[in-house]
Length: 475
Length: 88
Image (cartoon, rainbow over all chains, first blue to last red; front, side):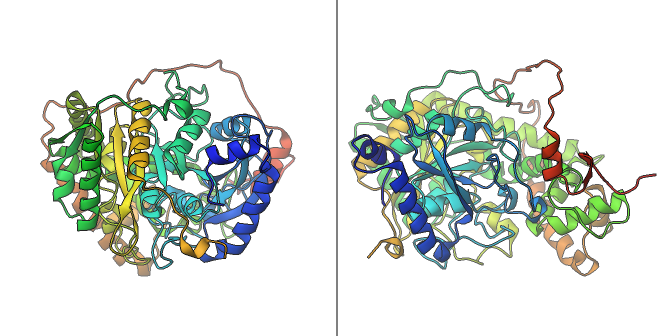
């Protein structure tokens, strides 16, 4: 079942396979293989109309997006019993594009984490090495696609949650420009950063899904009215000679040698393909301060967004409470996991009386500097490339007891998120242990077209792409 | 630790007494990491705001879910009204 959306679509059209058969094959594979990696929180097939362009092909959905009539858990106990009464806009759009839904995938609780170890239910394992994490927070979606337990999936990215798991699992993960895709029906984490995007086996599939989900939505006032493009066909065009920037600081820090080498090789390949590759220097603000900046802004927004989980209207409510205040406190204390509590506390602290100027306001100023950094870089170049993460997939348990070291694993994806830029992670090799390495390609704001084209060029020219891990091949 | 208790109370959370010390230690470690922002030169820098942001207004009309939805998703309800512990 190592099939892509594009490939299956052609087979459905030629009647070589039916959507019903694809469903049966995938459900059988999930039944047989998911116990090895636990990428699904719930498997519940939902049909929509089987028409063009997605022809009934089933998509897996990260369990922080609402599908009407299905549970949304955010991998948290606090949403216990919650069944969504409505569809997220992305679900509505996928359904209108003829997709079906396969189930809901695991994540770090409320998308807070980089390994899925913060899921209240279980940790998803990396399909290439079961002792390692799949990355996070969209680890369930990335592992499902990598292990061929889904054709494609949706994830969400706040500081790297699509790109880093895609990198760890050797698949493609696209975080569109902030404002490109509606978040209506996505459970909010940090609203100035959250963005939904596809996790797929090929760049072409990412283009197909982006085309299906992107565009203005009156239900999300941050969505842009910019017109969407026919990415599913544009992706195949060879881009003109582009200037590609490789920030020197990205390869000089604490980065594994194999990862740095794979990124340097990618730069050489682009040169061979006729692109102009030049080293660039960001001012240093992004690399020095981005993670600290993010850990003020994201928790601040999260503390406000997660105030709604109070046991009143839906989800879990503590049975012990004798009055309203106790009900809030007990519900939240029993319902949230440690990392979520930590971030709510951080956010509450930085927004509390007397600290606003010292933290949040300062963080928004530093964010402006990071944004300006990329504005100047993109005056010089059309595309920026670099690593997705400083390492390949780390061991389960390796970082889970040290939150700060976990935060620092997102140092290459966070600056891009703070600037609201579109970026894609594509496989660019493996390390000595055989684990996938991801290349991060960053485009200009709303320039998903060239971003996808350059990623597609790399995929075709390098011949590096998703392969089914041995444990998951049918004998 | 008193500060941790105060923040927890603002956030409507409680941290168990026996976990307070380790929580405070972890919390302080993260705070001292984010404190490095104080070294950034932000004089005359205006705060970031969302790109292309524009205010959009919709008609002020009530949209409501059918009663069955409340019945289904509320932790406690009566006649499709959400029930909470007694306030007065």
